[in-house]
Length: 167
Length: 371
Image (cartoon, rainbow over all chains, first blue to last red):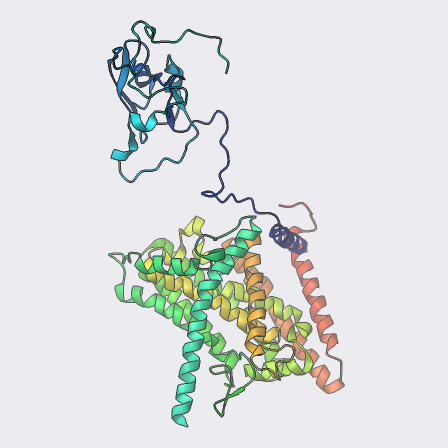
């Protein structure tokens, strides 16, 4: 009995000299895993057009009813995305979202993806609703911002030509 | 002259209480740091450099927290109970000598509030027992079953372990033939620390004080898993802080008393030439003993209640009686027949190891892998 107590005391004493496992969170961050599901990102094509075509399939797939999409018509004068329509309103309620990734799976253009950011906090319920401006990724260097003025007949197809899935 | 004495005592008392309260604040940090290191963590390091401002942050938080009094509580006793608990903890340090007397402004000032008292040890045992009233009254006045159970457990536990504690006090009293803590320290200066002659007594004292101040592994009165928080379940804000304070100040106090009785108190090299070294040596000894208490908390799980009582009555009490017998016989033989005192050390050590093995054998019956 007594030797067991001594053994226990020795164990705790020895572990006091081990390197702490603590990660000093706000300064040090552990990289997330490749398949981590964080905050959503609305992606663009290389020319800066939005991938989202406002089809609401993500909203339909969402089990938590967190996504609200309103679509509007594209014109060649004011073009947001390829094809007929684009999402004029795209809102995700981060308090409802369960980060299941069904929206990602449902999206026909791979417009919505779940990113790496897990630091979602807000002071009130209103600011938990992330509008389209917060979700859209920045315009790539090769492209211009939306709305773009485009040549007629160039962006008729709303869904890109399918390629063999790479990932 | 009388006025000067009154001023001296007032200043010393205020300084002592201030030291106790500051010590409490930093003991919480010390404990959290040591516990964290033993659990391979870092511990508090956000507030200030190395988390040194953490106690201040805690104090501010506790002061501004809402204080609730349950509707069915006995309000007067509910408010008085934390006071009854914290005051004995604060005044118990009064008899601990912090160093040899120093001369200041032409006056000889002893570095303690009342260590010259010939009733030093009696005072300690008395005051230490009063604080249990605060705990049991807190439990009862909360009108909460968990709190009441915690208070009752605390009383039962304190009564059981106070016997062993009181008998552990007898060893140093016998050796120095005095209850005056100054004389006990002076005697240790002459013949060496009492822990050398009474290792068994020191061990009993350490275990009994752990139980007396409700520290792990004897923290039954506040066992979270079964009693939510024990006697202070209904307390919040500054009233809770007073209980918290009492517990930690008692830790400091018993560490100081253990250092004085068994580890030479303020004694150390050159302490008689440079009296100011006395408090520093005592502080170092207190810190080491506190480390021991935290170490035990980090290691041992809480005892079951019936085992706690059984340990108190069936192991600690006979062992401390045996300790008193060994010390008494050793001293008589030393005085009458000039038996060297190291015989006493050997006997104490043999009885300690023997009894521990015997208890282990009783509990485990020679079987090894019983976990």
